[in-house]
Image (tube, rainbow over all chains, first blue to last red; front, side, top):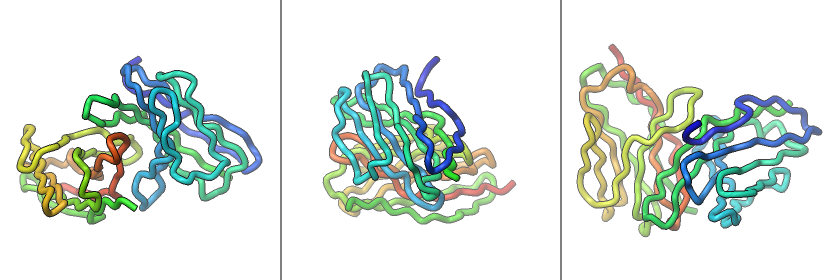
Length: 114
Length: 110
């Protein structure tokens, strides 16, 4: 596999469920990101991991919990979500320290909270 | 709050014409600027990036940057129906991660 892969591609969950989104990058990058894309809104940066350490958390509700066990894998754990959390969740990776923060995106997970 | 502004469109151009997409940003310290294309239901894919003032050309695409005016644009020459998509302007944020605009929807009509 190449690039950035996300699973699952689609997820429907109830407000009391617990689920996890998975992202894996095969590019040898040292930074990974979670973005949320809602209709009519810009891509919103949620979490940034650099060298497996979280460096930014843009005031994301605690019902979203990221985990980065190594530089190739990133998870987003979900619990007690709200219907307004329904969106496309995109994972991205980049190589920091090269002066080129180009981000490569996965295909996204389309999340629907019912 | 660092802002990236784009006209949401839709911008409609006939096939073969030049499409001009514009973006302004608020963070004067930003150094890197990117244009992504996103087809409906797909993830964003990078088209071009630009770091220096002036023009940068890649095939039918030209990115233009004016840091004094905090303005970046994308020109698409000889527009094709396959260019119909949403174009996202992204600006580097403090050396990592990117701030995105809402995107401009482009429709190229045959």
